[in-house]
Length: 161
Image (cartoon, rainbow, N blue to C red; front, side, top):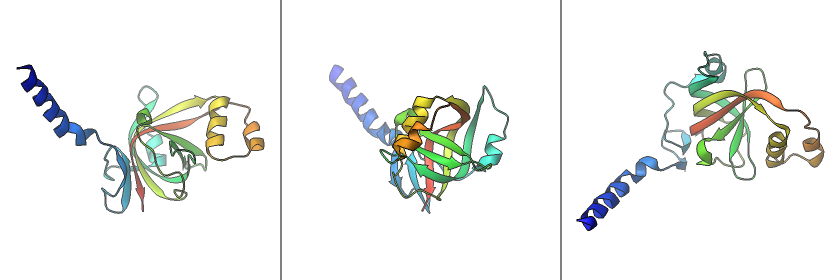
């Protein structure tokens, strides 16, 4: 009996595995490379409209479209996207579960699904991001104050080809 239960569990996990798979640059939606959870373009709002929504518990959840400014040059573990006021929003990926390309995303259109939060980022973290972005030692040392800004935790990302 124990062997048959183990076999059933193993088959169940094998069949369910694709549901938990993370995309790594596949073209699932025509014209877009997909990263993280499979998402669609449907329902995506421009970033300005998205963050203007009423926040629930300090957060706004859903899909937004934006322009990529840069990504982490070390691992692709974050992106900066352009805000309507010309500033940036830091995008991280849920549970460090997927990465985007480290180069070549500048100026590309992206659709992100997840949660935006207004957050204060400490100096050490800002310096870490600057280091990952390839900033010079002098530029990194100029970072002396924490910043309060929008951040985004994405579960899925589409980047237009």
